[in-house]
Image 1 (cartoon, rainbow, N blue to C red):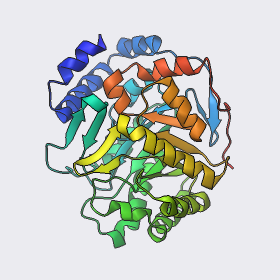
Image 2 (cartoon, rainbow, N blue to C red):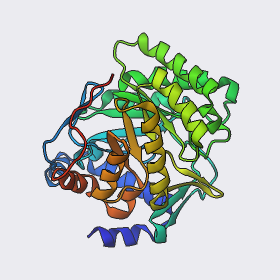
Image 3 (cartoon, rainbow, N blue to C red):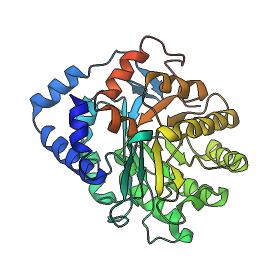
Image 4 (cartoon, helix red, strand yellow):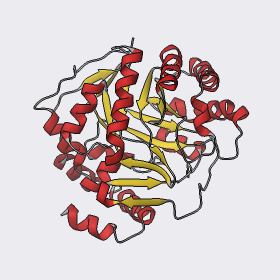
Amino acid sequence: MYSLIRRLLFLLDAEDAHDFTVAQITRLQRIPIVLQATAAICRIPNRPRTLWGMEFRSPIGIAAGFDKNAVMMPFLAALGFGFLEVGTVTLHPQAGNPKPRVFRDADRRALINRLGFNNDGAESVADRLQSFRRRLPVFVNIGKNLDVPLDRAADSYAQCYLRVGRWADGCVLNVSSPNTPGLREMQRPEHLERVLVLVRTLREEMPHAGPILVKIAPDLDGTQIDEVSDVCKRLANGMVCTNTTLTTDGGLSGGPLFDRSTAVLREVRDRVGPAFPLIGVGGIFTADDVRAKFAAGADLVQLYTGRIYKGPFLPSRLARELATRDPRPATRDLP
């Protein structure tokens, strides 16, 4: 069935197809019986694991970028994901880069995007996070607006976090998108440390706030991985490995990203040690792909492009397949 739907969606421009999907999901999730039926079809084995003191019913989450504006959370939860990550969210709303800006590479099961953090802004997303009655962890991914210079970026991240961080179970600092000019400079130790110190200070003043993670690029060399890992181990609560890889046309995700993102994940694990929480992202399509991420050091994993090519039932299908053989421990506590 999905193969037919995919063929029809692939007749549309990639971003138009995504917008059409978002519109249909937001309509369907308003119908209680649809959500109930979806959750029943996508029921997954009860093998929870604990990380940061939170229970994850499955180690498979949806990566940032799919639900940029936190408008599809009820339906995504019903699909069997173990956790959600919404965003990337910026302090102020922005339109992003000029269209066309999303392209498929079906032969390689890949996507190329140069979206540029198009989103509704922190205030709107905060309202949606606050009103969502969730039964699974929800993380929010934050970045800086296009017009914010590097010397003001840390303050922009902090102000965005101040608005959305209290309503999420955790926050991911996106310092690695290739589609915002200069953003990857935020991975330099002096910039990353400043962001983390500011955000941590604000978290201490909140009545409820979860872990702070940093999402890194797959294009870092060994020295850069050492530097970023050192800062994160001191000041963050985990890392997301990795974002899209840089090409001349934008950020590349999907099949071609798998090997490099997994190699970076493995290098980061070697540097941060066995107890520091890591989320593996990049090119996951099968249960064996998930197991490879686990073997490289991931505690949790996330999907994006795989869902586009394999369909909405991929997370529940992978969770069922993993239940038969999972090499990672079911419980990992934040040190």
